[in-house]
Length: 122
Image (cartoon, rainbow, N blue to C red; front, side):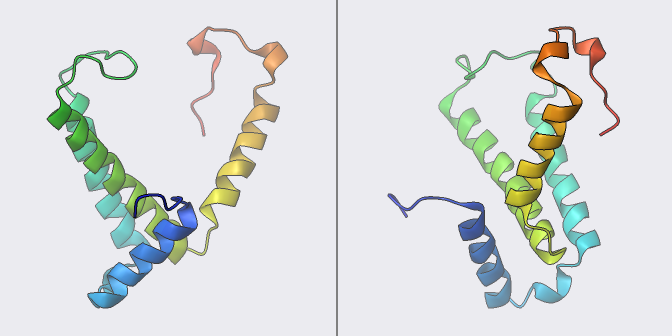
C-alpha cells in the first residue's frame, strides 16, 4: 500500500470489504458500532491515563508506545468511518461543514488564548 494516497473513501471501502468477507455486516448496526468505538476510545484513553500532560510529538515515548498509540487511534478512526458509512453520512463533507460552522461560531477577531471562553456544548 506504500505510495497509495489514503483517503476516507479508501478506508470506507476497505472496511466495507473487510466486513463483507467475514459476514459481519449483520452485526454492524449504528448502536453496535458506536459501542465498539466507545470501547476503543477507552483503550486510547488508558494510554494517556497516568502520563499527565505530554509534549507535542511525544519525544519521551518509546517507539513501541507510539506504535500502540497508532493502533488505538486507528481503531477509533476505522469504527468512526464505518459508523458514518452505515448511517449514510459523508464524513469528509460533514467534517468540512463543521469546520466552517466553528469558524463562524469562533471568529478569529473574537478569539483569545483563554480556554475558559470556549463552549463545550458541541
